[in-house]
Length: 290
Image (cartoon, rainbow, N blue to C red; front, side, top):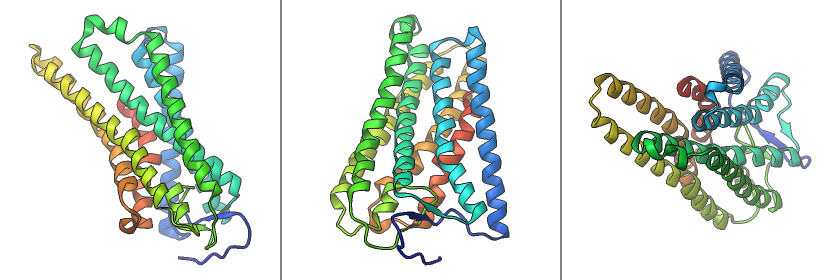
């Protein structure tokens, strides 16, 4: 790995791959995924907006997921692509804080929104007669607003801490975006208290929502199992399995990365896992949920 010394307040993003033939191939692959994610999520939002038949709570939540994914991948990939193309890997101190804030806000908002979508399907299948009351437009707005507010509050806490601690080592962040735990490896002080807050945040906003989603789909599958229609069972099993696959793709790498103690973490492994929840998931969501 190249050595970067501290010459200014700017950070240096090492990146995902080196400037080589293989790196160029991987870069083009990432850009293709980015374009597919943009097209898929924009199409989803536009379709739901234009078709009045899709103005239902389920599709309203789905349009919000596409909106989050659109912003999520746009927070990470353009800067990474610019660094690779122009060779300028620096990012300003404030710019790093802004990227970190939006990344954390969108990450938590998506995790909570996926939980809301699982609850929506649970009520629709297990309590169809109660659906109009339990999942009204007002309830949808509250769930979406709550997801954004909780994401922003959590992000403010983590980003503020990261921007106020002293950095006395190299300013080279061994990642392809400003991930706060990766930034803290450059800190002058012991950050064990912050690592504990990361554990608490990960448990609250990732582990618990994943458990809720798994329980929701468990109830859905049990309800489907008692259905008489073989075709209905097959369709429901197929839908639930694909949804759970995407949810696992998002939550599992996130949880595995953030719950491990620093001594067991590897920058290379962290970057590889981050590709799943920052790049692949925003591309897969519109394909699966559509």
